Length: 204
Image (cartoon, rainbow, N blue to C red; front, top):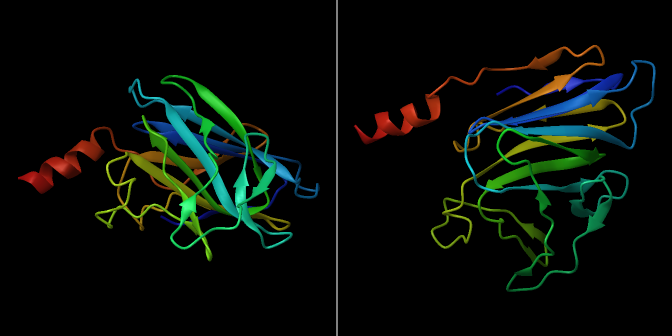
């Protein structure tokens, strides 16, 4: 799915879990400098009772350090890793319950916003940095956890964000950018029943 690019002006990101999650970003006036953080609103329309866990992980563009951001957008570097990899600090943020929304702050990162249903993701740190979940690995501890992620870069020129559907097929969600006037810009549409239809067709 093509990336959405907005110069920050007045930008807000919005992400929606379409099991159902929706995310949206807010936007400052066009003449304004890109702020240090922007809001990301996550709306859960999944119909599921599971707790959602959200993670904002990436590279801090001003320093090149890898780490995670808390709900306020504050950066925390990963500790030194090991070989074999050592457990990473718990970077999870409590996400919205079904029918609710949560807004977090996105800092100037190049990274990913992960979300998982029902269980926290397991992250580890090696001497080369963070070990990301890899469901194609039979021994990955996240293999049986329902999760997905969106990728973004927020820098002094603006925001680039996409739903990474070219990388994997998992929990459906949409992502868009909401302008100051309220209009939401997104690419692609969620199809009701589409997620289950894919799996049903594969089974038949």
